[in-house]
Amino acid sequence: WGLSAPPPSEADEAPLHTDTVTLELRLHNISVEQMHSKSNNSVAEILGPLEEALGSAEGQAPGKVRVLGIFGRYTTRRWRLEEVARPPRIGEEVVVVFEASTAHAESVEQVIDRLRAGLSPPAPGSALAASPALVAALGHFSIGLHTPAKHKARTGTERESVKALRTMALPILLSALFTGALIWLASC
Image (cartoon, rainbow, N blue to C red; front, side):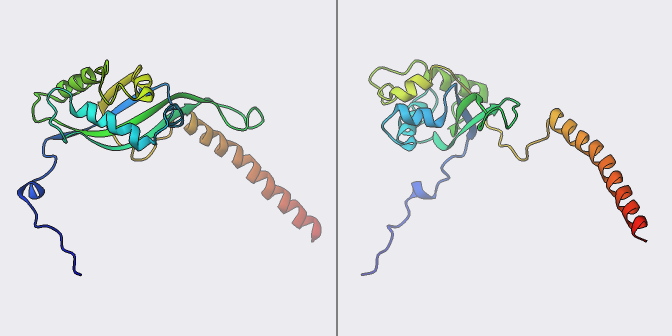
């Protein structure tokens, strides 16, 4: 009962995405949880119509647009632990990372413009128009180059707080050493 894979075809041996760019679609003012709750489908099923709509944009060949990932992003304001148990989220957005073809475009900007035009407004009767969660989310969106975050750089406030901690730690350390020396001398 040996199973064998079919012999590879020429299409299997050809590189899939030779002229591609990695972009991100940012859906503003919505979280992944909100997008999921507005639809009765899983997030993966929501992304199918989005991938189809991006693939049908001018200059994109079917199967050349490929969703690579999705994640939520937000910021929080400065808060104190006694104020709230969980800090409020500000500027929530869903980020969809995808590859798009640049083969039929003169520049990446042209690819972005064509993709943007392909998403707004969704074509009536399309799979994208049939997804109310996506139609609502596409009310406020932007497309740009994807730049993966390596390591989060410290902000000015974080650097100041580390500096303040160092400034406070030195006098405390000296005071503890001096108190320890006085106790040692008193015991002798």
